[in-house]
Length: 99
Length: 482
Image (cartoon, rainbow over all chains, first blue to last red):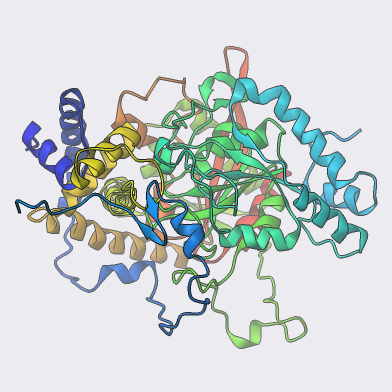
């Protein structure tokens, strides 16, 4: 059961502000879509509990080695940030004095 | 006089190499076409001026070093990064994002001397089947401008269809290359998952995404695929076909062709029958009859779990979307709407700059991944995905290819499905199977349906085992001339 509260909670987990109107619409959409996808519970998958993600291929590992010169991309990447200072991204203070 | 409607890569190659046309002159013809058609169709978000591409290509030709794509104008989907060009994934949140590096496919195309003509429209973050989810307006179908071009690679398909690019790159997560190709009357290839590097493709659902070409004909799709495929250290999921040593040609280290004179083609009739337009079915049956008359063997097959591909897709895809979209936080790149604290920055930025469909999928993904539901949805869907893959591999022991229509109906009207997400999702019913199982598939124009005096194109979809693109190309080329 999807309620408006479920949608508000999910939106908070996903860090999305949504309006009241959006909440109602999303509740209806999510209900319909979940009812549709629930069909898969018909299928017995108990007999095989092996790692299904192998289906798309094996993990390919390589040596954990830095191949680029240090700082090669720093400036061009930091320059993309909405707020930056020297070589850093700037964010608002997370803890206030009261915390 | 060059006819852009019928021009192919091979013919353009000849014209360029024999100096019947210069790189600049060929490009100018396409630019004129964009000027003429784009104001109405809205395929291009931006036309590039990249004189360095033109100079490099002309030099390669003049020095006799031209390769298959040297000087060929290519439109690039707005989610594939070209260094120093904008790449927005048709989203408000990336509206002003300028790529700091090249996608691997772009690096490869630069080595070929290809010309990047512009970036083309798509559904926001490749999420949708009509380009109606673009933050920059819908791309209309050149065959009938009241209708959608399909999606998410609608701009790519329309650009080729309106003769404003010889080739376009798209990306396919659940049908996003094949469906718009079918709607716009062009060829679209979804390669084997991992055969083309995803490095520099703005991620949607990482276990499903693949880049592929949209072209005028099958031979052109093959040329582009050969240019962009291959192992890439920057994408650990890339793979190549494994072949026994004796099949390798010692001379040039290229694998030998393994095409067939006669293909056994399986048709999952029980799966297709439901919900398909009578006109589409008629064209599909006629296509099968043509293939049969050319000596290919058509047999009925059953893929018992195939009807579960769409439900599986609409669990796994949003789960991956929700994690991939978490990077748009207003901190590292993209737009920012300021709040009172960091939490509010996140909420406002994402709430204000991300579109409705993407939000819907983020929440759906968050739901199926949340504790208490994870096993019933996400884990279960992976188990079913595995079973479906086993299903299809079993079918490929009996047949070489599987044939299906690309879509259940021709291009729909703009606005017809935009208010009903589930109706839009059902558009993917015949295409998601190839993404869920990772196999390659191609959509080839198979016929037209006449509605209101317009000709609406319908595609035939051929599906092959992993890394057997060559069978798709070979059988596809044979089908084209029937």
